[in-house]
Each structure stands twice: as C-alpha cells, then as structure tokens.
Image (spheres, rainbow, N blue to C red):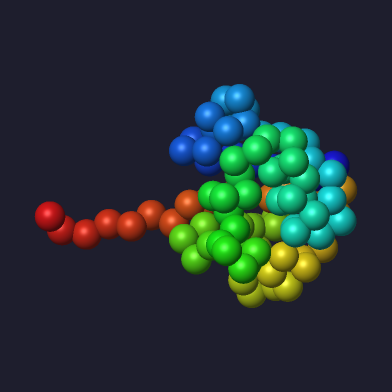
Length: 92
C-alpha cells in the first residue's frame, strides 16, 4: 500500500486524515482507489477527460509525475504519493 498525503484543503474528503494507505500499482490506480474509498477526490483531481487537473500537482516520492509517466507512473508499495494543490497569488 502506498501512503497518500492529503492536503489540508482536501482533508474533509478523507475524514480529516492527513495520510491514507491506498493500494495501486500505478498513480492512476492509487488515485482511482482513493476516489472509490473516499468519494469526492475524483472531481477535485481529474478533469472531464480523466487527466489530472492542471492546478493539482502530484508527486510520487519527491518527483512531479508530469515529468515521469503521469497517471501511468509506477507506485511501489512503500512509496509516498503527495497531492499538492497549486497556489495562485497576486496583488489585489
């Protein structure tokens, strides 16, 4: 099982948990299983085509999956998956 780190803004979906243990051989498997176990994550993580949303960064270990194999990135059983919402800012 991979350890999935849940960002503060998404913890209401995980029952307040900061981390969850989720099965999956690839990142896509892990995230789909996360959605199955805790409904609501899918709409926050995936766009209409099933791709990761542009404003959500996902890391396997410390590597951004956009520079790996995206949803096909292998996730070893002892690995950590981190979900990090993009932070937008600017002057008011």
